[in-house]
Length: 294
Image 1 (cartoon, one colour):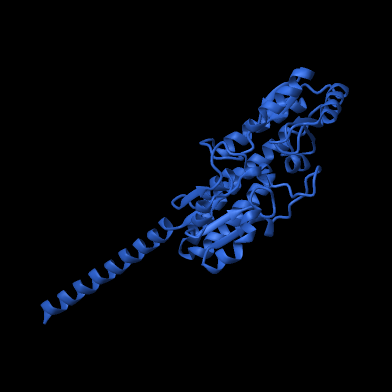
Image 2: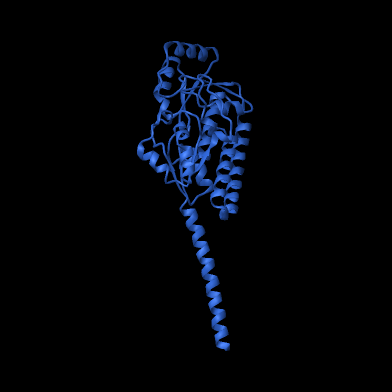
């Protein structure tokens, strides 16, 4: 009898350990099986901060102009295999997802539309919504909170882990915001020239104005626009043109006519191996140079 009792106790212990192991494996598998698609590289990085073990993919390939990206049938089919999709909303970058978001949701895909949580502002040059809110550290903080809340609904058993990851990067983004506020608080200039219209949110947050050569990188500036900018540069003693990678040719044309130096700026439009926080610090240095900050 005593031996039977020991065997039964051992059986219960082993069964209990097996259940714990199985549950932990299911939880790990749940996170490993989370597949996320984002439309832009910044959102891919933000997602990886919160859910580092998930499968995270960016739809717009490296080197492509996100403002003119046309998804292939294969790209669209990928979305139906996702656990979650993160995109901006009614913008020229990814409004095509608006047309299929209801069907995706009906298939069980978690659709995270950032515009449903953060109001977008219009471009100054068109009636389109400006998508570039990730270049504002405060909005970046709001975006990672939206991602955290969404994935906690998908995998509530990992809620505490996602919360901790969020708090870690919330702190880093708040530090970045403080660096921008301090770094751009004492500048002799309040105007910058950019290749296209990507600094509206950043300028509104930190108190400077941006004037663009073209509305979108693929456009060609008009003769009238170039003359207006040449006069503006001369009248305001502007020495620099801020350019993203895809706008270098446009920047060069104005630079050659005015002598203004081109400063590189990372807009995170497409996939790369560059870290968001480091690149945003480098972007701050560019803004400080262009605005002649002390």
